[in-house]
Amino acid sequence: MPVANWTRLLPSVALLVPLVLALAWVAPATARIPPDVLVVGQIAEPRSMDPQVVTAVNDFRILINLYDGLVRYVDGSLEVEPALATDWEISEDGLTYTFHLRDDVQFHDGTAFDSDAVVFNFERMLDPEHPYHHTGPFPLAFFFDAVREVEATAPHEVVFRLDKPFAPLLSNLAYPTGLIVSPAAVQQHGPNYGRNPSGTGPFQFVRWQTNRQVALQRNPDYWDGASELAGVVFRPLTDVNARVTEMLSGGIDLMVEVPPDNVALFADSPDFQLYEQAGPHLWFLILNTREGPFQDRRVRQAVNYAIDKRALVEDVLQGTATIAAGPTPAAFDWAYNDDLAPYPHDPERARELLAEAGHEDGVRVTFYVTEGGSGMLDPIPMGTAIQADLARVGIDVRIETYEWNSFLERVNSGLSGKADMAQMAWMTNDPDTLPFLALRTDAWPDRDGFNSGYYSNPEVDALLEQARVSTDLDERAALYRRMQEIVHEDAPWAFIASWKQNAVSTAGVHNFRLQPSFLLDLRGVSKR
Image (cartoon, rainbow, N blue to C red; front, side, top):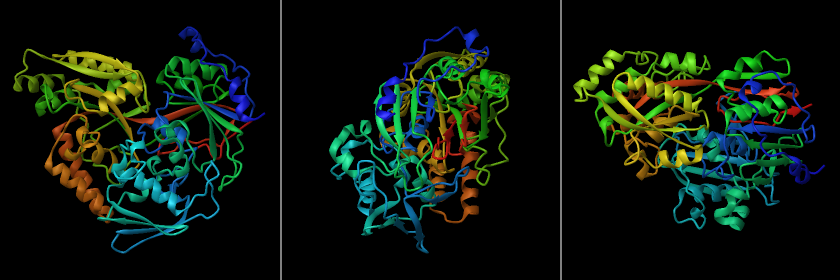
């Protein structure tokens, strides 16, 4: 049955049964789709199918199956290997990268992949004068800000010339922002390209029904071998109870981000497979350092002391995360500062700091919380638990709750004039990524960054700039460790937890594995 037909058979999101039934064992129902089509329960509706305009892992989990980059992550690793580039050379000074491209690849729209296509992609992102730059914005173009020029030196050879050495370049090229889109499709659809995507990946786009499904079908001509799956359907199930219900009843085959309450349920059943893996994830609170009480470092430190992170990790998250000590996830073991200890739960010290800052009678703050999103770790229970902890030391917290995409729009545009604190989660590919995009002065929202709390420390800025141009791994590590010490003391965030990512599938799903990149690579997956 053609995918274009079988996608019409998919049901809309099932009505929720009472939670007590959702948590009881229910035999999976027979799916109403072909047995070689995988149905994935997503945590939110995607924003776009254009990999260069989105920032959320929720979207990237779809896009990594539609597109390829010049390089990709090795299965089960954050190391890179060839993809659309067969190999590459780096000049001795680290300023020139020459990529040799595959000469037998086509985009899904039938146009050829070549060096001109690569140039188009990066110039679209990086050159404000490019005729299709208006199809952005491109919020993660920061990943390539050291690139001065991309030149097609032969039909299947492309050269990246850099202004300065840039250690994370290959890793950033493997990240979804580096995925290659069809120039012809962008030219045809303009700003609507995100609803009409065309890549070179193992699956090709069929349709996107808003708030219902994104359907992909197998690319039979995929350069790395056709998938055993006929297609994949991504269903946005924003309510966690709905995802659990659909998993138990057979409405979906694979669910990412299993709620902590349900981990044991799936782990103990022979009809499901539970997957768990640590990765470079950080869940934290952004504090507004530009205005309000969090301009004072003592108040920010008080928040860190007031929050009982152990209770959050052990009780709310039920052991599915570890306590965070600072802005760098421990999964980056080579760059992680082992000497930093998490802020202890010390309400008395929190009260002392508040009094020193002139808030002995308490203070009121507004707190943005999301209903759910990529890596957000049960955000509403986490938010209410944090609210209670802060109330015990005299911080009166008013929570405002938003749907994920609305939440991102509010937070990413900056907290100034809107809120004092906000939840956030990042899943990153390099220790450079999160601090460079969210802690530098030049990363304030009005400068096209993600430093939504307006933190600024010139020493941190200098350390981050130096670390990304160093080609000596030991030197980079030392710079990142010093940065962590300063940020830990300045406390522009409340450092909460690092997630042990998880997923669950039916027993009939084979060859699936979680990736440390947090992407959802379905190339080798089969369903029987």
